Image (cartoon, rainbow, N blue to C red):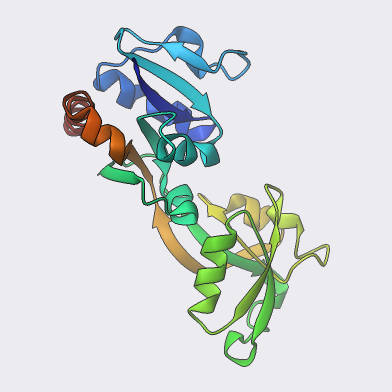
Amino acid sequence: MSIVLALPKGRILDECGPLLSRAGIEPAADYADESSRRLRFPTNHPGLDVIRVRSFDVATFVAFGAAQIGICGGDVMMEFDYPEIYAPLDLDIGCCRISVAEPRDEVGQTDLNAQSRIRVASKYPNVARKHFAARGVQAEIVALNGSMELAPGLGLSRLIVDLVQTGSTLKANGLVETDVIAHVSSRLIVNRIALKTRPDEIANWIENFRRALAA
């Protein structure tokens, strides 16, 4: 049975290309073409296939053993916190941060120390709840999968918790970062059971990625 490597669609997939090449992995040419209908791709290694899935789904595929290894954003790992996942390598790609943001013209008007409850729009409900709970504030989460920046201006929430790279989208929508919850990057992740049942194969791929990082 082939080892399956789960890769995330989108920006990180582009950043994965040089890393895969240095690790000696050459997937079928259309793996990076998101207009391709295929989702599973052979590689130059008969015992390794690549699958392309939503970034939020990489951790789930690996945690449940559908894929044995994957490349996953630290934001996704924080949100799901699967105990079935082992993350041996920081790949230093997909670098960004999870931040709290609010309307520029309302900065300083929200005193969290004086509030016990606040409404927050986010695709990271667990991360957001934990962050505000640590400050003694109960966060009412409005779950959105995108367009978070619209929420404050349309009265959907007072704050947002979102992934930020340059901050340009926040700025374009009249928002500013007011708190950085965590700096994150993408990591190589491994299913713990696969590591026990197929130790040589999995360890070999971890070492290939480790050499790729050092190259």
